[in-house]
Image (tube, rainbow over all chains, first blue to last red; front, side):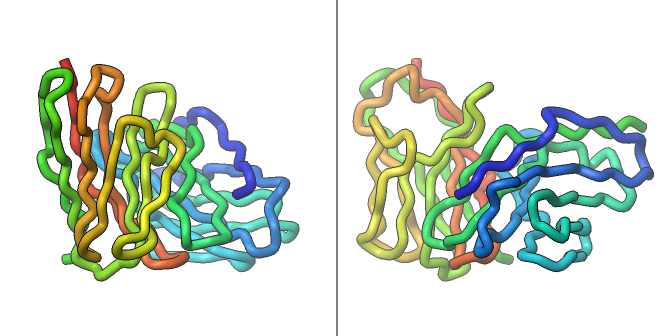
Length: 110
Length: 111
């Protein structure tokens, strides 16, 4: 799977939008972009994924650049519960487990 | 409720005493895997399974065994645990390119 680059950490104020960037310049045409997050003392949980078009769900939105070399996870209104490590992962095969990088540690300030 | 369960959640043991961490999923997923998570090293794959009786090594398989005799269960076996296997362990299951579900974790300490 191709590599992704994310900032080590980010900070946000509560109730404000958060944009978490991810660069994946070597992405292939069949790579899906997945986002997971890991809350303190819990297992990772799925957030969202997409291939080419922007995606929305109840948790977040995923904005994918036209050239697909970068993407942004958008939390529309950060809450204290959103403080977690967020992982951006590329995946072109469902036959093997996800490969996690270091992710971005998001802190939310009240 | 769709879930992955692990037992025990916490375990303190001594070097050399065989132990098994169980993992079970109720979603009829074909794929299951084990990860360990250590500070500064992130989540690393230990073993994974593509179906019953089909397993493969991940990145850090040394010192671990797995078995997949039934689709729902994927136990992790430490035949002779050592202190360097002190870690937080996560089991996961998934179905093709869909989301991967993780268990709550097992914190293992080997003295």
